[in-house]
Image 1: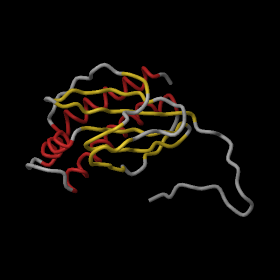
Image 2 (image 1 turned 180 degrees about the vertical axis):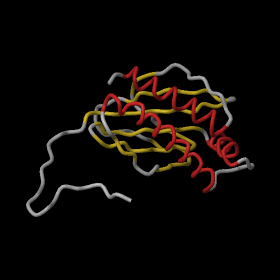
Image 3 (image 1 turned 30 degrees about the horizontal axis):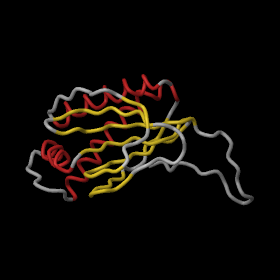
Length: 173
């Protein structure tokens, strides 16, 4: 899997979700590979990916854009950050990263998604432990930018268990 594969998946997924769920047409800015954005203000939704490849996908934007996204999704005004806004941003991130996952599975094998985690506020910092870089695509929206990022690496195949402990397994619902 190449960075170009991830960029293509991010662009296609973000365009589709923004168009279908929010009625917004977005065009990507210049993709880049590097460290995750450092100090943040606004809303950041994180979705974990696990399988033969593991990592994280994220969506970040300003508080004002988060409110606009929620207003579009819920078809109701959202004047400030509240639970509905955070849930809407988490769901949009989940849909985008879920679509990215589906597109990349043809190359990297089956993966699962975690439940989204949302961080919001002012002056917080995010970083990924390890040396793997993020593939980032900014999407300019009216006077704002939503940034979609994915960081994936091949999972380690060896699992060392302590005596008496079984391998973890997925729960089927």
